[in-house]
Every structure is written in structure tokens, then in C-alpha cells.
Image (cartoon, rainbow, N blue to C red; front, side):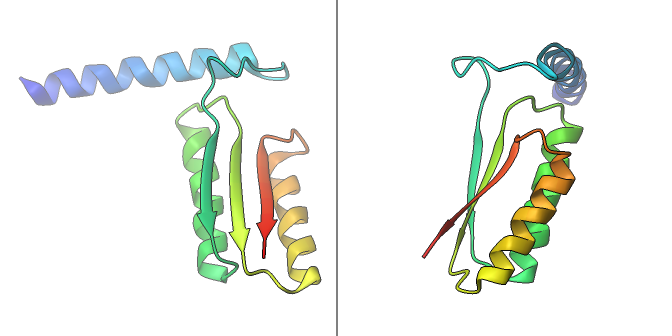
Length: 103
């Protein structure tokens, strides 16, 4: 039955993700093994919280690699600094939740 197979597969994936997270926590990661999630947004409040939700979803799934938001159209320097500060606080300074600003 596909539903049962899918459930077992998801459990195995979560177990593997937790194991990988535990193995890579506090260590440099191998770029050949770990996926770097990159996503693009504008600078609206809605896109901001969507990015935070993506970070927490990746963490909940046990994703061991970095997550980078490419934010476009953030013309206000204060807004950029606030976003960077929030990203750093969410990530606890590990450097795995990143933001890059484009014009």
C-alpha cells in the first residue's frame, strides 16, 4: 500500500535527517553531501515571515545545511540591518541562516 510505504519512507528520512544533523552540529559540512537551500523574496513583511517559516521547517525536518534568503528591493538600510539581526538571533550565530541583499 503506497500510504504505508510513504509513511515508512518519511520516518526513515526523518531519522536520517536527525542523525545527519547530530553528526554535523558544530562542524564544518561537506559541500558534496549537504544541500544548501537558497530562496528569493522581496522585502515585504509577508515574505519575511515566510522565510522564517522556511527556516523552522528545514530545522524541524533535520536539514543540516545552510539556508539563504536572497532579498530584493530592500532600499532602506535600517530594514536590512533589522533583517540581518533577526536572522542572526534565530540562527544563534551559527551562520547557517543567511541573507543576501540585491538591488
